[in-house]
Image (cartoon, rainbow, N blue to C red; front, side, top):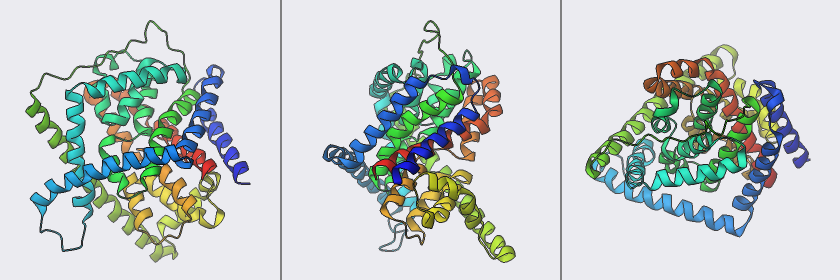
Length: 393
């Protein structure tokens, strides 16, 4: 029965993507099938094999050590602020983003990241049936973030059709930045975070291929990456340190606002209707949770967390999942964890529109017009990744 529901879930996701397709006759089914098979095989590898266990443990160990290094700097500046035995979220989860941001800056400066992004992107373009630009952008979004990736494509933004622009933005919203992966691993099991990163990469191509099908002219498929301005090593360090700190502050501010707002909504709804706002959202999203492979008995609570992520952001939902009074099974925890690892929420529309508009106002306005369609597609990617994982858990 478990597999029947998962297969039904995949078909429903693909059907909803098909409903929103801009050109159903041009959908390429062969790469879609290939990428679905790749997703299932990668899930099996990462979650159900000894090799996968070694990979996950290796990645988790690397990020664990990086967080230890980061805590040295945080303790030096903020040591003594927290009570003994306490671990404030801002100090232990958000501020380490500064150190991870610095490492990304160093890898960029040494040309290691651009080499990896180009190489992996070229390999992906042979599988997904899309152009080199789209494939590069998906990998770059994962490594440098949904805002910063557009800076590397500044030269080409003005020449892109709306179709190609949609695919680039959809990739940016479907993935997450490596700079905050360490923060996710403090709230969710690392194996689900790593698995989600890989699955979302392919899921983004699958959904974009259906919603936004087109054929790239090989002569137009030229990848021109904007080189960063020449900086000394220490200029670069200073810039990435400040960028990382800005991200930590922005995420912290958003958490304060969204969590407070959610508490206020819950209070008002309980006062007026004797039921919390999140519970109502849970009933609305429960059918989706069930299609993702979550049992009926847990579907409403799971649906509430899914809705929280969509309306606020993934951090709020992860905190709710890890710190809430839930009694989910291990399988449900895995499915939900994978769903939460993406930037698919309403605030991301503004972030992506702002990033593109700052580089090219005309293209930024175009992104604003299909912003809701972007969120629709990115949410389908998260649901698809969760369903794929439900096959192997």
